[in-house]
Amino acid sequence: MGTWLCVKECGACCNLDPTDRPDLDQYLSPEELELYLSMVGEGGWCVNFDHIKRECRIYEDRPRFCRVEADVFADLYGVESEELNEFAIECCRQQIEGVYGDRSLEMIRFNREVGI
Image (cartoon, rainbow, N blue to C red; front, side, top):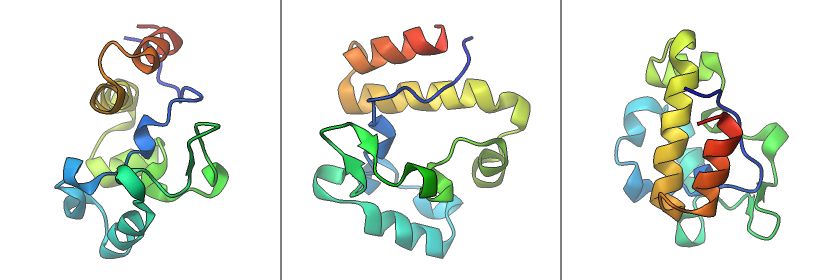
């Protein structure tokens, strides 16, 4: 297993289409769910995602649910810190596959960058 990291110019996680995440209310607070839904724009993409630069416009100030951090994943998903790396890699791979495809340039780059 490789080591998780956010791969620049991917943005798969910025595809927030709530129809792809029917269980949002199970791990987001009512306030976070409201914020999440307010961030969903055209085509299910986050309104803060810059499609030209393929990056988050509010990265430093992004909401808690957009962060891959041990305490956030423990609180939201019950993932222990020692499981975070493997869990985050699998989450990214699933999201990249769903958004771009399993043979996409984004998937190839992600696998290479994390060491898979």
